[in-house]
Image 1 (cartoon, one colour):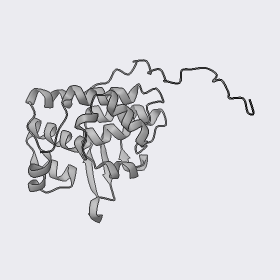
Image 2 (image 1 turned 135 degrees about the vertical axis):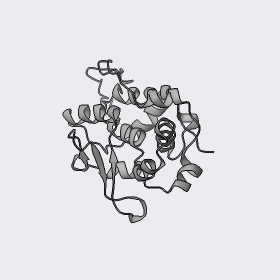
Image 3 (image 1 turned 45 degrees about the horizontal axis):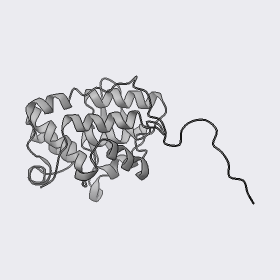
Image 4 (image 1 turned 90 degrees about the vertical axis):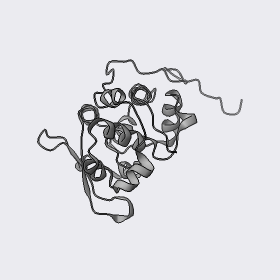
Length: 193
């Protein structure tokens, strides 16, 4: 049975990406996966040209879907809009991905033991469904049939958790974590010594 994460776990994951010692460059990728249901491999191919952040549009245009399917337009919810606007203002790329950083961020969030493929898509589908029960919108957002959604993605979550999920807000002023390497000049190894 596919797993989903709770609101608290989702918040820890995104907040961990925001304050990561090496910078917040994984935040847009994780936020798009978690708050829109776009497939991780699709997110990695996205550029800012695929995002429409104007108030009248607020959507992600996914042009290269799984299996060469037609493009789809995925709406941007309020929490995702705040994250994307913040990230774009700082020159971060939406599809930036580092396997090393990804492992570190999810381990810090305590998610390593239950991580599985498409965990963030399962989480999005489950929380979105419990709030508005709009299967047509969810099938369009995720690019899956209703049968696939109920069979592979939607899992029971509480309505309270779903509402918190759609109101997610990060602590933008939280200090960045300290690097394990420390700060300042690093001692150099002497060659030939």
